[in-house]
Length: 76
Image (cartoon, rainbow, N blue to C red):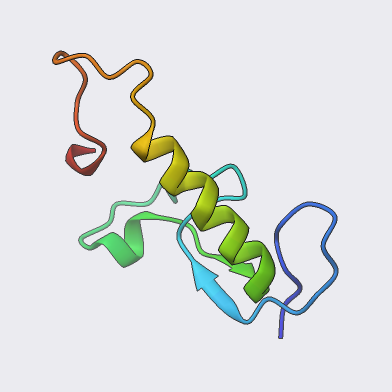
């Protein structure tokens, strides 16, 4: 099993995610016909994946910089 992709972690990465360690989707650069093909895969241990999801959730819930002219994250 591959190691966790979170910086500094040496645990086994049993959870597969499309989120990068920075909490963003990273395009593969290939012509893709589905979400699964369009974004790179990362491996995380349970603890790092939980922390990553908390940070993403906190960023989404934050009201900073959310004007009406911003595109919804789901639209990208």
